[in-house]
Length: 245
Image (cartoon, rainbow, N blue to C red; front, side, top):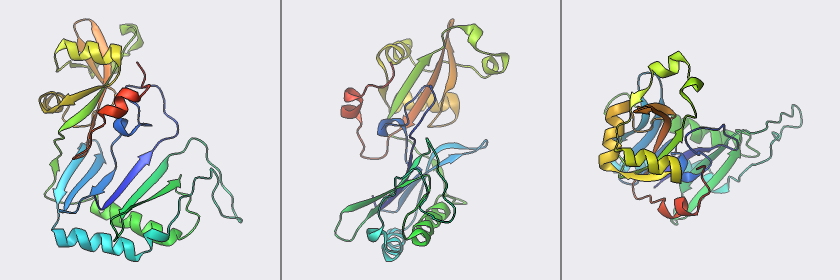
C-alpha cells in the first residue's frame, strides 16, 4: 500500500455495526504499488467500495508528489479545538481523518487529523487530500470490488411494531442460510467468505450495505457488511473485541 485515507469516528449511534473498529469500517481510499485503486462511494446511484487501476508508473508519480509535499514532516493533531488563535473553534465527537503514506525507506507514516484541524503544514496536507479526492472520482473503468472476506454484523429488531411502514417496505428477504443470522445476532460479528458476500451483493446491490433491514420468517434484523481490503485478516481482532452482541 502506498497511500490511504480513512475516517475513524469517535462517537457512533447504536446500529448493526461498529465503525470504531478496523474490522467495522473500510478506508475511503487506498492506492497500491501495482496501480490498484480502491475507493468508497456513497450516492443514491452507486454505493460501496469500488476498484479501478492506473499504471504502476502513475501510482509511483502520485506517491512521489505526496512525499514532495512534505508528508514525512507532518504530525498528527488530535486537539478538539482548532489551533487558530484568531477564531478558535471546538468540536466534540468528531471523526479523525487518518492519512497513511509510504516513505522512501518503506516505513508507513500516519497523520491523524481531528475534525480536519491541521496544526502545521495545513496547505500541503490539504493538497494531498485534494489529490486523493480526484483519484477517488474516476469517470470510467470502475468495478464493484469483490473482497476475499468481510465482516457481517446483525442486530435483531425487538418487535415489528418498532418499524414504520416505510422501513417495512424496504425490507428484503434474508439472503443467507438461517444459521448465519442466528450466529451473528447471538455471538456478534461474523467473518463471511466469497459465496456469502456474493449473495449479499445480489440482495442489496452493494458490497457495503449499512443497517439494511432483512426479514426471515417473522424475524426482522438490521445487517451491515464491511469488506476487507486485499491481504487484510481481522479474525484475531474480532476474537479479542467486545463488539456488541
